[in-house]
Amino acid sequence: MALYNLCMKDTVCVLTGFKQDDDAIKELEKLVHWIQWMGGQARDRFPKSGSGDRATHVIASGVQCDKYGVAVAIGIPVLRKAWIHHLWKNRDKDINPHDPALIAEFRFKPFTGLKVFFHGFSETETKNVKDLCEKNGGEIAADEDDASYIVLEDLKGGHWQVTSTEGSSPKKERMINIICKKDLESDTDSDFALPRPLFFKQKSDGAVLPAEWFWQSVQIDSCAAPAGYPQYTPAETLSQGSLEKKRKNQASSKKTRRSRPRLSPLAESSSSRTRNASFDFSEDDSLSSPVPYSPTPVRTVRRNIVQEIHETEKNYCTILESILEIMKKSLDPNQIAGALLEASAAEQMHVYIHLINAIHVVHQQILDDLESTLFGWKEDCDIGPIFIGQCERLKEVYPPFVSVQPKLVSLISEWEKQYPRFQGLLKKCERGKEPGFEHLREHLRDLLIRPVQRLPSVLLLLKRLLEATKKVSSTMRDVNQLERAIHDTDKVVQTINSGMKGDLRQTVPSGKKAKRGSTATAISSALHGVASFGKSSGKKMKRAASGIIHWSPVLNKGNNGSHEDVSSLTKI
Figure (tube, one colour):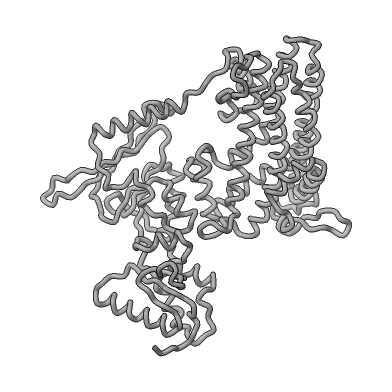
């Protein structure tokens, strides 16, 4: 075999999805010859494991080819045949076929060749998903009959019913009927607007898919395999009786999940008063099942309030962990198609991860102390010292984050628009469809308000605990300690509030140059403060902090040994 050059040396291309007519066969033969003349190998299937060869590229006719999903799963780029044409055209030049920019140019976009119809989305979200679909190579179908893929939104208060029936025409074509029904136990208002029904011919290469498929495809920058979403496939045929049975089972399961053990009426009343206070408490701060520390726990008012503090603290730590995991996942280079954020945004995200992790470390220590106290519960146990011992650290870790929290929320919105894959991850988390985040069902922007809310809620709970302790005995040692804990926690809240007011006073009007006291400087000084916290927080906390983030890419040391903000921080 003649060689023209060796630019495709060590390249193994798998060609798939091409038609079998004369013109397609001639085109395929031409591609194979070009690959071989440039030193590469051409195959019609993946090499067997253990053969010593490994496919490096897949040349396909579209995203619906048989080998497309396998290639995406194992991280092999799937390219258009134009890539081979480009290499052969520039065969006399010094060209690198593995150049990332060149691969990105000829790589299939997730929805290339697909006509997609979106149904059940709000007006704003419809515009968003249509724009994303077109930017990622897709075409918007005029109606359901014109579509190859139909994407159904996850409805709050309703569910989709998909049935397949045999048509009455002489050809007896299969027809797909999609209707939306309101959930029997939905909390949604009675005027819930049901999307219109869909009725269309079943296509052999078509699919009816949930919104999760769309956001997964955007996140991995490849078309997700429809076979992974069988609940809406057109081939599914259900009788009316089986559908009703399925819905009853789902309703029963939902009812079981909603039921939870209750505390005593007095504790429930106290919990209700707390949630009705001026602070905004979410459902995650409500009580879940009692902690099984003792087979026969003594149900006193004081113990119930301590348990409530423990449960809300546990929920709060879980939320902080989820925020950190979402942020770290956006930076993970080992996922399909690599990290979701580019270098400049990743540097800023590292800063925020460190600030939130510093808060998490302190609250995890508080949670551990509360669990130890509840495990060996006695009515005269001291709760005040748990918070007194952490107030100085709370004062160090909260102001840095709270001062930049509004900017982080704004950046999240900007990054969603700038990085569609990042938006795909957040949309899946919001819908509870991302593995490991099924419990969230909230947007990252909404979760970021929790650190602002937490300390005021702790203050209210400590005040309730002080009242209950005084009723047990006004001479109990924990009375004075709780009073001090309330005083110190209140000072932390006041410090945060004064810092937020200071940030507002430093806001620079549009068109004027920002001074040194800007958000970038605030973050730099915040990190310096958190660094000091890390040195004085004990070995256990330092180990926890070091496991989350390396800040060497973010901070530089100045000549005087102080931390200076680098260029990436000035963008914040």
